[in-house]
Length: 422
Image 1 (cartoon, rainbow, N blue to C red):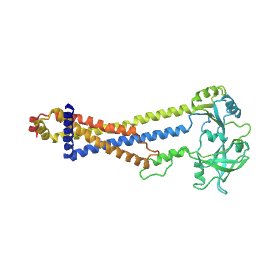
Image 2 (cartoon, rainbow, N blue to C red):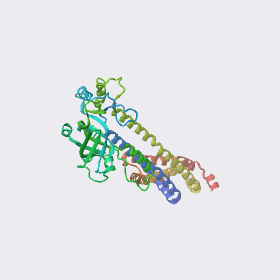
Image 3 (cartoon, one colour):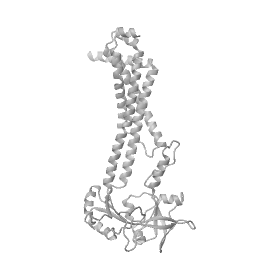
Image 4 (tube, rainbow, N blue to C red):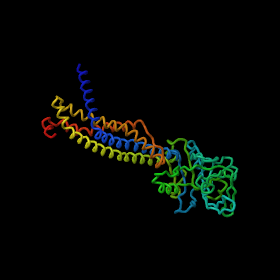
C-alpha cells in the first residue's frame, strides 16, 4: 500500500515536472542547449585525447622496448661519427657477452657519399649506412616498396641498396623505384647500386592540408626535421679495415631482460670511456609515455572547466525560471503541496533537461570529434563505453548540482509572500 502511494506521488511529480518543462520552451531550450554544449565538449575532448594518447603509445612501442643502442658520441655537429672507440671487434664481444639474451645484433657504419640518381643530373651528398639484414628486422622497418636486403646479399657484398621514402620522393616522386640504379662516389670508392626496396616513413605526419587545417605550417616544419634521407647498403660494401663502427643495435629476446643485458654490456665497455654510449630505449619510452599520460590527464581540466561554466549558466537559467513561476508555486502550495514536493519538482525538471541535453551532447560530441579528426588532427579519435558513460554521468551530475539552488529557492517561498510578489 505504501509502495503504491509512493509510486503515485512520484508519477504525479514527474507529470508536473514534464508539464512545467513543456510550458516554458525558451527556458527549457536554453538549459538543454547549455547542457548539450558542455557534454559535447566532454565527449569530443576525451575521444581526441584518448586517440592521441593511444596513437603515441602505439608508435613509441614500435621503436622497441627490447632494443639497446650502442653508439659513438657525435663530435660537435659533424655529420660523420669519427670516434675510434667502437670497433668491429666490439660487435663480436657483444654477441658473446649477451649469448642467450640477444636475438639480433646489427652494426652500422655511417659515411657521406656523393650520390647520382639520374644520368646527367647533379649529384647530391647523402648519408650512406652500411649495415646487415638484421638492421631492418630489429627496427621492424616497414617497406613502402620492395624489400630490405638479405643475409646472402650482405655476405656476398652485392651492390644493392635500400632507400628512405623521403629521399625517393625528392628524386622520383611517384615513379617506381625498385630496379633503378644509384651511383655513389667517395674518394676512389665508386659503386653502382641496384635499388631493391624503399623504407616507409616512420613518422606519418604528412597529410594533405584540410580546409580548416590551422597547424599545417608548424606541422610541416616539424615533419621536415624528422625526415630520414638515407641509403642503406650491405655493411662490407663500404666498411674498410680500420674503420670505426658508428652504432650497434641490439634486440634482446624479451624486454624484461633489458636491464640484465645492460649490466652484461658493462663488461664489454669501459664505464670511464665517455665516447661510447650504451642506451636502452625502454627507459626513455616508458618515461615519455608516463609524461604523455600525465599531460592528457591534466588536459581533462579543460572540459571540467567547461562543465563547471555550463553548470553555473544552467543554475542561473533555472533561478530565472523559478522567478517567473512564483504564481504557479503559490497555487500549488495553497492546494496542499509541501515544500519538499515543490523542491523535488524543480529538481526533477533540472535533471530531466540536463539528461536530455546530455544525450544530444553525446551525439554532438561524436560529430565534433569526427570533424576535428578529418580536418585538423593526425590521429584517429577513439570512443569508449567508459567515456560515454562518464559523459552521461556528468550530465546527470550537472542536472543535480544546478538544480539544488533553484529547488531550494522554490521550496522556501511561502504562498502569501509569493502572491504578494506576483
